[in-house]
Length: 435
Image (cartoon, rainbow, N blue to C red; front, side, top):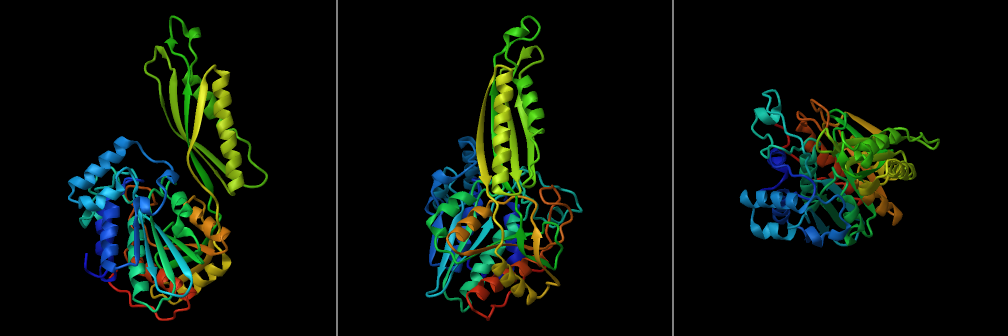
């Protein structure tokens, strides 16, 4: 891909939108990013296992799913040499510009899609204009196609500026399953960052509005629970069984009864259950997928501990055994006021921005907080911003879409913010986003 990124923002975003892949399966997506980054020209490009320790990944899917999506990418014509480093689900990459003396600045964008089948309704712009998801079962229903476009174009713009220092851009996999933030935060590329930026599109903020820094992202964890009992004939000898479904029912009722906490808000949910074989069989095995969230990391830990205990005690009550595994989790981390101010000042000078909101509560969870926490712990500043967009329906729905005017806005806000903390006043021209 030899063409500059900034004149073709909408084209690039739409191509990424057509090929969404789930967490740790972003094979085609990563290969496309690598092609674009090589065309831009960076000083260092770490792909897959070179960008982080694979053992630090969370919520890695089964080998069967990884193989399926790898084969899809291969069958679609992706260069096998680009795919080979990603085999086994080591997706994503980190790109570095090294421009001499100056601060080290980090930028994180996420790259995965969701298991949502995109609408084919004629009123849905991606369907009407020919860039609807081609996978059938997955969709960029949260704007990560926009985020990747911002990351590439911002990197290109900074490269063409008078920036002096080191820019590290994390193209992070598996955000939707909270699996990719931790390994990237533990990597060598997260060391020594002075200023760190993360960003999201929309989140109910309209086109033209920018939230300089979010507050109160919820700490969260995803949990898999399995209850094992003893099978028996439900009519002939029910007392001989240990009913895993009955135990699960007790567990679910108990989980929703976890007491509120005086230190702040918590959330719990049991989102999926599966088990049993027939109406006349005492079920000996059931599975559940649940989550816990908290206004602080400590409150999430409280809810997680109670959730685990209640599954285990409910199983014990019904002569069953429970195994509860934490699949993935993320902490709370707030934006630093000094960096919020820098983003707000940068956004004020961006064409198309008509309202800058200094801070807003996030109200959801994000594993970029691992990177924010690492930077802040090491003495740097971190900020998570929102660039608004008019989206016809909510995130994580089959008719989600973005206003492509926000493509140019996001690139300019990020570029100006990065150059601002590096002491650079001249911003390269950004053009070509609008439809």
